[in-house]
Image 1 (cartoon, helix red, strand yellow):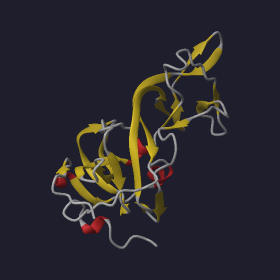
Image 2 (tube, rainbow, N blue to C red; image 1 turned 90 degrees about the vertical axis):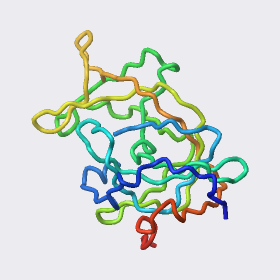
Image 3 (cartoon, rainbow, N blue to C red; image 1 turned 120 degrees about the vertical axis):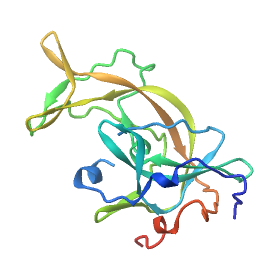
Length: 218
């Protein structure tokens, strides 16, 4: 069992709002955020319910964020840092790195609902080079189903998209050039991660309240 005597808690317990209750839209798309994490640490996410956390400042009108607790462990197996991470940030996808394709063009077309989207078959990339956050929904809650560990391997400027509200939903932002519609990309800086096979053992006592880790679905 890894000791936590050196572990610095870097989240505000007063901001915790309890286990998240998710609506259908949130379940379907668990606010892309990319925190500055240390690349010398391995981050461990133990099985837990996704929790709601009040943001210091609203983001795109959202006052709360769905997050998970993570513990940063150094090469000696010591727990150094305890933080919370945005679920959506860990599940973020993008359309490629700007440095690798500085003039990316993707056609925009209307889908079956009449909403503008990138043409079918357009490649999206996960922030994880390998592996993925093991998140499962159960009713109106979501949880991490198994111990999971990852490292930060880089930070890159990537292509992202924006949406605007229209009468029947949300259109992807587009622009027209020579009579053709294209996706309007916006740059976003995202971390690049890789899953670690050997998950370090961590002691979460005093760091994660039991309410977030008990009675998880089997």
